Image 1 (cartoon, chains in turn yellow, orange):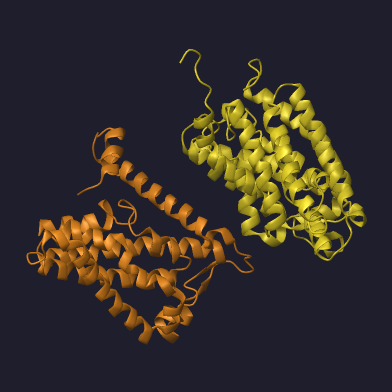
Image 2 (tube, chains in turn red, yellow):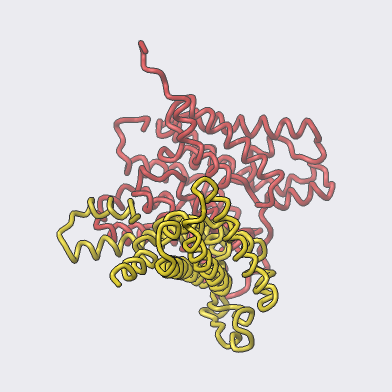
Length: 314
Length: 231
């Protein structure tokens, strides 16, 4: 890690603090669901991790208290729709912890970002639940109804915002009139940006990945926008849409699954940015972050081996 | 007799083509999205394995070393053609579902592997047993993987059995969970890889446990011996 004075549980605590702003903004737009999802996710993460550690005869308490499982759970919980049924987040967290982390030997050995592996699993397995978002602030009662499958929730649901924007653009709507669609997105992204700057300030994460990632997004979407400004949305919109800021500061910067050399981090972040825009614009899924991060996770060993700093004098 | 027992044990467990040799993974992973497909492909593969092993063994002294691989492939593809025609006439719907994977049995390296490693060096009766046991061992893995993926992916077992067993098969179909919404990943290719990985891990776990129980062989030696496999 960057800082030698913090151990992994303190780092995880700082990450949770940094998420508070973004989560509060999401709460403002989507309602109580997001908090319920976070609680469910943390419980599921601790249960999954404890169960697997017990199977492997490893000490449970010391590993749980490093907080990494909880952070995985929280990241997954804020990535999925706040009104998704309870079993979606539970199954997703179990998959993330067991198949994303523990099966490789636990924290520090996982080649993939566990939260994004869980997200990709959920998106592929349950596409309907994963793309039905709350379209307004949902009260605690209705959120519980929806999450516990008690009643139908058609009244306050809609497609993913990013999908809406894409559909509108393909219908020929002018970019200016799309503002209402992207306002909530921009605020949520702004919340995560603030949290990310806090992490940078506390030296929990390196600047390389956020900067190169955002440049990757900006340049790729900029080139597309210059080619045809009717078909593609402008780069500043891309920066404040979907999970861009969450990915820049909280997901792509995962110390275990990201590149470990300074130049490697620049390449890694930049290519994630490029892939996110390509998958977003040309792909069929609501956002490209999870797939972009997983694809670049695979490339990390290669990037690291080519960017290893030379030992002085050799 | 001991030879036959050893051949049987190798085929079903110690040198299981799918779990230890990890051969024939293309059909294994591609068609195991439900039990019925798995049974059909397993049976077809077993039939080809037995026939090709016996023929290769009978002609093993006539086939010169230099051209043995092309000849093995020719023999195998003749039997695959027979299977393909049989399926076309008796199980036409299933033939359409399995599609390219029936002719692709030719390229299943498990079959060529047994011809090269066993049948070309042993008598025809041993080769027949070897082909049968290797085929059954392969099929059992196919069926287990198919069952896992079908149960998790669709919440059913033996769905569409009528394709294989006719009208009797319709009563075989079991719905495990009512109103199950399906987990698509299990039916898609990643589900096959994850499922196979879990079965291989389970097999290794059983090997380690039984070795621990029966002798004082150290854990590490046992794992090493397992990964090398038997000849």
